[in-house]
Length: 347
Image 1: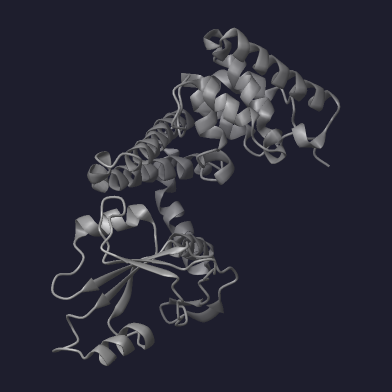
Image 2: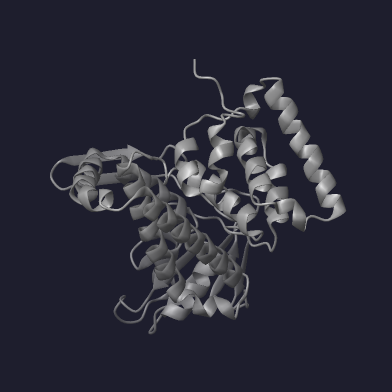
């Protein structure tokens, strides 16, 4: 929910091309920032009902699109193109107004009323959906349901060995991140963007496989497969896979060094995982693909990690949270991981 707002427009252009659409109106909010102030009403059956005010109100872009519908509404093709632009897009629907309008009636409708208006798209929605999905996942009703599902499937998961589920997890993770890269590349191409309708379904399928494999590994005593540190676009798994295969997995790049370079440029918060990446580089012999300059850059970075570990610099010492799981997923690395090098001492 959000309250009604009056938007002051500095500039209005009619029927000017923007990307692959010609909006009825392109308006500019000028130097003023508008924010989405509102709240969320959450209801789960008859058990939970709560109104919560937004803790964060994202700013709008400076451009607002307006579509005026008289007879024909916005079709699917135009909606996809609007979503790609990711700009606030308001529809003023005159088709349901019933008869002709005077100029004053039309002005009142556009400026002062909310009847006949709807948001076709708004960039704030994606963030709102992520917040709601996280709250749903954390809700006790969802947690109880997930626990029941785990118990139901547990015998089937335990009937197959860890090695089976580890291989399934790695295969699904690779397909999932490759699918995400295809989508991101297609979004940059106006021609390919028209074919995107099937991609989310492919990504959903691979994510379901990945989620089941992660739950099966959890049943075998190896939790954490769906944690962001493991499986996000910049998580441990896609980065190690990129090093292993010498190509971007989850990254729109062509070589393992390019992913490694992104790791080398990452912030201090990521240092705790750097020993795992150097183990992967050694295990999968990535340096055989380096140029002389790349080899020198890597050697300098690796030495900084060695110095940090020897100095017991906490920022370079990793928690052992995922070590057992990573040993199962990447058995070639297991001996190096199990050595305990770079692990933070438990207090």
